[in-house]
Length: 148
Image (tube, rainbow, N blue to C red):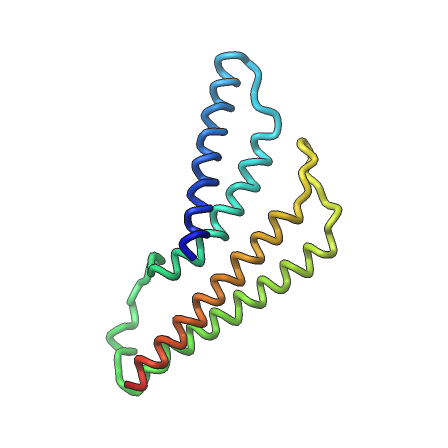
């Protein structure tokens, strides 16, 4: 999981450097980087979806405990495991649907730079599947903690 987070960070750094270069080329030489918007869109998809599993693994997601007072009862100790399991199912379904949609649109390319979409879509599906794995591990951990 850590490698996914590091990969996202490296992509973010490259995106930052590309944006600085694009702005410099645009304002200093009046020659913007052709296709910078497309590269930014592809990079953002990778940054978000590849970092999601690492963020979940280290507990970096924002959690709001609005109902904690009412749900913090021994009889409801199974609820976090169930919610993580349901989340894992949703993200596995998302990954599966993204793969199916990608296989149907393998020839789709970007407008300016003619970059194929499928490698990025498969990376998004991989990120969703890895987050589902994290949620499964969290469900198992929560269930084991409940039974002690």
